[in-house]
Length: 102
Image (cartoon, rainbow, N blue to C red; front, top):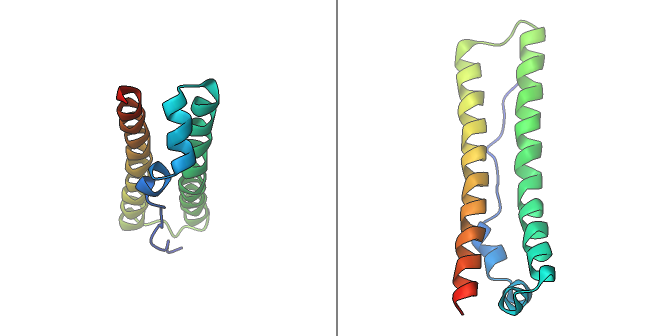
């Protein structure tokens, strides 16, 4: 099973959201909820991609088609997705620190 290249939305597009910025400036609990909701939204597709890759590994193994090369490629692909997810958290953390300084 071949996996297509993963498409992950740009984290900075969410950080440009003026309503999120306004809420963050108010330093309200609603702002924190909005930020968590945005992070959850950004993580749904990558988590689904990781799940599909893992299921693909299982199917390849079950049918005796899992090669060392495929396994390494799939692991690399999962690690790339996880790195992007980590960057999302870093972006939101940096964004919230900038807003708190305002």
